[in-house]
Image 1 (cartoon, chains in turn green, purple):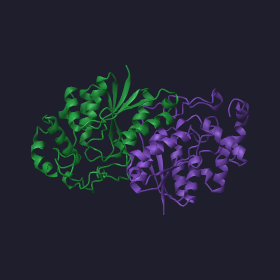
Image 2 (tube, chains in turn orange, blue):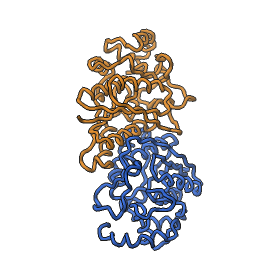
Image 3 (cartoon, rainbow over the protein chains, first blue to last red):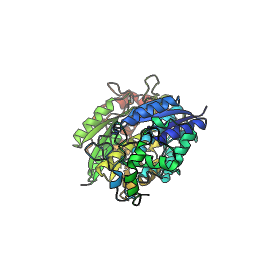
Image 4 (spheres, each protein chain N blue to C red):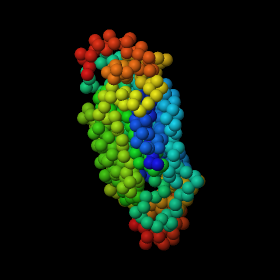
Length: 240
Length: 240
């Protein structure tokens, strides 16, 4: 059975990616990262999702003592969606080189277990502000694999699979439903409180996605959608 | 003052690279990795070298539970130089994606502190078996920086500096002497015993380099050179 390493954050994108990879016939090995994110809650979600999918998972602890992101540093504020002025700016939740670090661990793991592919749930639609979610970055990383690893040199290679890259959040949610992804177990909110904050970028896009897909979010039981609609509507003029 | 992140292993290549970067006018921030290598001794060497160079250093602990290298797994044997049959094979001391992981952390650090460059002491001469020491790999990684980081997107970029890439070990040692690198503090042996084993690849190339440079190794006080000459001479026909 062909093997794949799947980067699992606990959010709905990576959960959908895991179920997608499984459907493709891969034996999936999940990597979950504890990198000091304030929404540690997503780690528990990721573990539950892997268990539900009956896939082995391991949590890798990473220390990024230099911070440089509001997702790591509790002194900094997680921006509220309706305070975001420009859509082109890279948000303060950007963690320097985060996906590059994640991919490099995945690559090491994939080489060691002779996996054929690495799956990552990145997509450009919602998080267009993050450079490490863009197709050109993944193209460049493929070249790194070909030139800098034993697998690359021995011409086996390891594929980077980004099945969601061109999908909107609504399309991902529909796909998730189709694949029986346990959406109620996924966690998106950056703030990692008891319930989703309904104010951060990640809550905004999740609610928007469910609304557009015409599906009720099983995590918030539709509550987030209703509560925040006004705020979102007001700001829809300024955001995509 | 322009800043640089320097990857410091504790070996003589990275020590020379640190002193080179310092000479170039960079304020150097050293990154040392504790990745489960059996020659943990090099970590202590790296700290001493950074202290001697009066540069801040931090040790990053990395967990690679999947192993896949004789440098990590004590069940596997570190190959003896004279047992190496082919020069083209990738040695068992190759750690899957190690330099890619190191560079990704350096990149994250460099972005966070707004450093202009990352210095790494890789070179193709002695370790030609490691794909992540080849110039084409570094060229590919530069593309990753340009496409996948905030620094790249904002057109500042972060340079990868590989000043030793085309140098032989003897040339590096001569350069080190010229730069007053504290060679006695450096550690190369893969086995990490009390004294260098004189049998691993790393000891072999170190001794060969000092001999060719006509310099006495202050770490081994020339002992390694004399002890191992016979073994090395016998095998020089088979190795470069």
